[in-house]
Image (cartoon, rainbow, N blue to C red; front, side, top):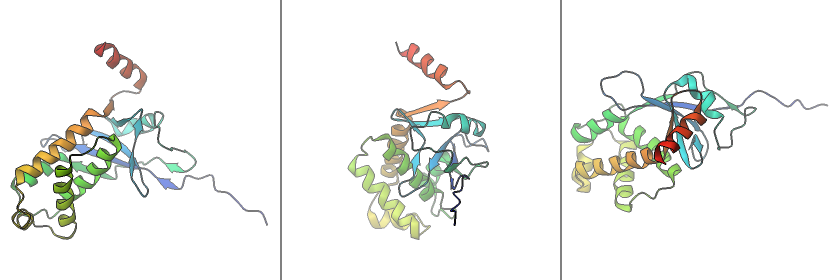
Length: 191
């Protein structure tokens, strides 16, 4: 009996978008996630790789230093999730309830991205954000969390903004298919 080995990709990569501008409906940039025990974002030389258009996903993969294997990993043909950073900040600052779980979803992907930067999150920020994520995994109401934990909204917002800064300091954005040209132009500007 001959065993047939499938040559079809078996693992779906996740295409995720991030929205920063509250006045636009579509994401501002995208990345790919390699799902697994530890979801890994697309990376190159220690930097997170983002791209401005989902059509650039296959091009961005050519720079992946992740364990990308086209015989295993299937490139997505649609956006799997959009994380609205502006909405998350608004909810953290103003909301009593997060019915759509926007905060916990944004925190969870942010934890993956910050971990991939290898920048150590300050322990107090980590404590605050992980406690909030744990709470919002089972509850949707924000006010009891802040009251019971005696944590201010501003301290959570500060921690969230630190994470966004850590991500921003360790990412490269592909806006056109010629990524190497973009990188060399960035280096020339720095020099």
